[in-house]
Each structure stands twice: as C-alpha cells, then as structure tokens.
Length: 170
Image 1 (cartoon, helix red, strand yellow):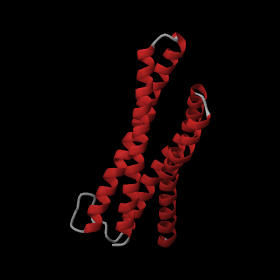
Image 2: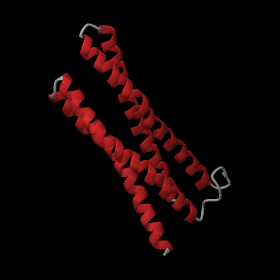
Image 3: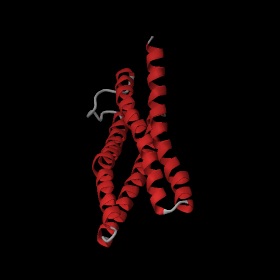
Image 4: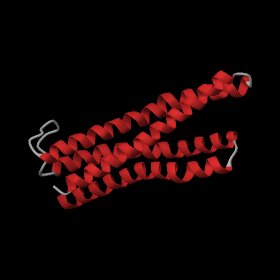
C-alpha cells in the first residue's frame, strides 16, 4: 500500500510542477510572442486576460497538490529528518527547494491578488478617460513588472527542478 501512495504522490507532485512550470514556458515562449506579433493592443489584453483566467486556477490547484503530496513524500522519505535539520545534504537541498517554491507562490499570489487587479483598475480608467497619458504609462510599467515577475517565476521554477534532480540522485 505504501508503494501505491508514494508512487501516486510522486506522480501528482511531478504533474503539478509540469502544469505550473510548463504553463509558464508555454506562455513566455509561444503565446506571448504570437500575441505580440499578430494582435493589436485591445485584443492582446483581452486574450491574455482570458489565458490568465484559465491558467491561474490550474496553478492554484497545482500549489495545493504540491503541498499535500510534498507532505506525503516527506513523510515516506528515508532522508527526511526534519524541516530545519541540515544534518544531511538531502535536507539542505530540500530546504533550498522549498524556499524557492515559497518565493514562486508569493509571486504568483501577489500578481493574482494585488498586481493584476491594480492593472485592471488603471486600464479601465485609461479606457474611460482617453486623456491620461501618465495613467497609461503606469499601466504599461505595471504590465512590464508583471511580465518580469512571470520570468522570475520561470527561473525559480527551473532552479526548483534542478534541485529536485540533485536530491533525487542522493
């Protein structure tokens, strides 16, 4: 029974990470370049808003799956001796991995709960007034910042995958 639980937990853990990091790769390397090359500004915003509305719940579910399966995996891992116990290399690598995952989660929820709503509010003010160049530049700057946070999460995600590979080889 333990083999089934561990195998299923590992599968779901990897699947959740693939959904999250793979989605970021897809957005940054495929969707955004095509959108920027083919659509005008109002359509770009509508399409990216639609993609975000579909992708965000998948990431939220992935985060929940990562937490639950991570607890199960740690419980069954012979190298795990405690969250802040650095007596073996595996624990130290896992601590680093979870630190980077925590940063990814913070960035994800900051973008979704703080930054994107602010961009939406400012964008609607720009659309209503049509005479607010400073407001328009604020929106562009916030959108750039949001994109940079997505790129940061990609780098952090790749680091997490590297640390996972290293810990698997120990």
